[in-house]
Amino acid sequence: MPEISWDDFQKVELRVGTIMEVEAFPEARRPAWKLTVDFGEELGVKRASAQITDLYAIEDLVGKQVVGVVNFPRKQIGPFMSECLVTGFVTGDGPVVLAVPDRKVANGLRLA
Image (cartoon, rainbow, N blue to C red; front, side, top):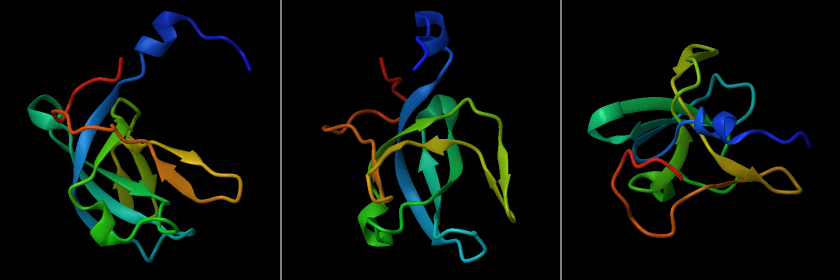
């Protein structure tokens, strides 16, 4: 794995946000949810597609804080425009476990 510099790491805006809304995404090639995430006053609300249906039901996600990359370019995913990347860990057999803060923090805080 190539090393990166501190400057490279600082280019990635990893921020915490709260999932406000979750919708089914039946048009996705692989099962996914459409998420609406509040990243605080500075960044506002962003939408993301997340392939996390194996481990998370809608009722598990609303109100949950997650870590997202907020400075990727927008990406068209079928009929949906994704504005951020919600992060997680891919387990050995495929399901994704979300990266989350272990305590509630203010939306928009940057991962240090």
